[in-house]
Length: 142
Image (tube, rainbow, N blue to C red; front, top):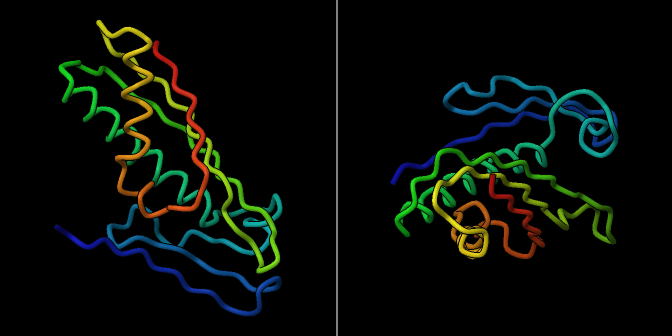
């Protein structure tokens, strides 16, 4: 299996510094981030939204795969993650990820869909890497 690479460069101190993040594929190239974009409402990206995007992509694929494995033909799965970071005694901690997913799956009832959606929450490799974070799932069947 391949190893994927993310890159970051930070210059300066925590509050006055600035940085950029990139991916080896170039999907992200020198995207700016700073204290304000991470812990306030400033412009730029931040690691938490990148984790949200990574998990949302991972979860959407896991749910599609689990639906398919049970004989369903998912037409679409759209997932939005809301990543909460809060101050604690050691600095800041990601405390919660709210998963809002909506899927179009012909021929499935809501009870079955909810069971499969809940199972996919634990099957996503990104979620496995984030043990200790509370995941809250809101799954909607179109």
